[in-house]
Amino acid sequence: MNSEVYKNMKESVEHTRQAVIKAQSSHDAEAHQQAQYQLSLSKQWLREIEEYGELEEIAAEIHRIKEDIKHLSEAYESIRAY
Image 1 (cartoon, one colour):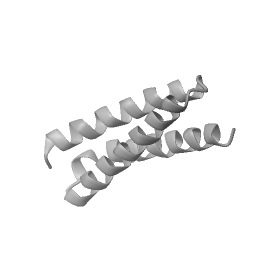
Image 2 (image 1 turned 180 degrees about the vertical axis):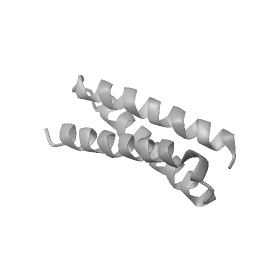
Image 3 (image 1 turned 60 degrees about the vertical axis):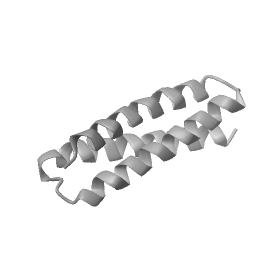
Image 4 (image 1 turned 120 degrees about the horizontal axis):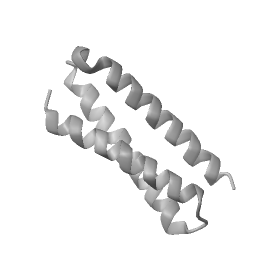
């Protein structure tokens, strides 16, 4: 697996987390757009990682990242409902 892709995915999830937190505390449309953008980037990185297929050595970490993205998606959807 390309460690650069994995590193980018982890960074993307952290950026997504920060963007969702900012959007939750703000009524600013730009903050909400940024959260949505970061969330889609994280999902894209996850798809790329999964395409490599050789995930045994980091399977637990990938599972944790999937859960993070799922929770961030749910959090973002909850703020969109307002």
